[in-house]
Length: 402
Image 1 (cartoon, rainbow, N blue to C red):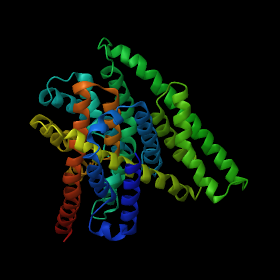
Image 2 (tube, rainbow, N blue to C red):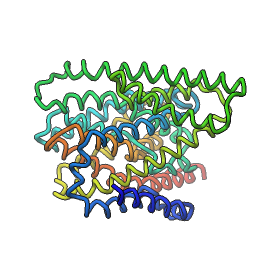
Image 3 (cartoon, helix red, strand yellow):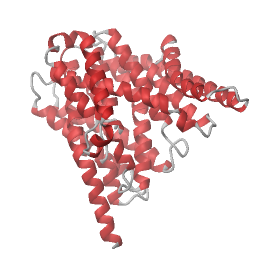
Image 4 (cartoon, helix red, strand yellow):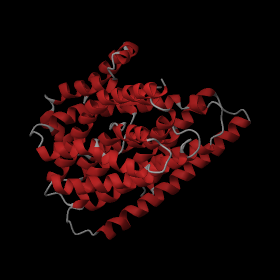
């Protein structure tokens, strides 16, 4: 534990000292942290399995996910679903469900021996996109603004929307007796989701209204405005867990409520502290991911798993998006760009760790292996392919207008 703490601190400090130049070379903090995690993972491989499979690790992963989901929810601008509302709704409520179904069906073919509940868990791990490791894509001016806007909303909301499905699948797949029916699992997961939504809305709304009132009466300092946003995901998480709800779903809903109701010209600036906290927690998860990679890849990767993850990163995302955006006003080039620009990152890592903690035996091993392969695959495919796609799109537009 002490060695890991020192390693994370040294790597983050070293990256911070040269962050500007490293970004020019397209060397990101996650890349360095993964390599550091791999280096630590080899000598700690024997102890890693038992360390990950502990309740305290599950709680830590949930708290980290709560903060990250809160940040995602507060990062959406231009209204509840951004400036491209109809297209964003299509991506979240048409393309995402279709992708999950397609991933489950593909898994039934390529990953034999796993029941559908475990396959749904794995689908929830590999499908949500996360732009944290590839944030430059959302600032790339070669990518059309409407594409960047809709991707930002999708990246902000998709993991929170998938979370209740993930909880349901975990409840069903994690039942050791295997006697639970889908209806029984739903009756267990649904109250958790409802409690989480109620608590999240209540906490987010109360904090937003209270902060608006306090700011109007000049009762807050610049520091206190930032601190209240750090406490919001932690408070909603803690209260939700206390009443038997899902903590990270509650934090996500809290972020939506705060983002919608908070009335302050400095709100974006006030988010910088919680954003920095989120960046530090993300760094920890990438380091852990590097160590987990050593554990997951020890026995090799079956061809079926490699094909499954490759398809999840490409066609299983792309085809549902092409279907969902029919009649949306997006050109075919823009639709292809939306489908291609879908990196996987911290959300997949945390979901994968939670699945490994709850599941057992081969199901747990397959879940963590899928996590590792899809995230590493995304680093290659989107780390290289996303800038290339943006360049190709910009070049094609220049030819059309030239």
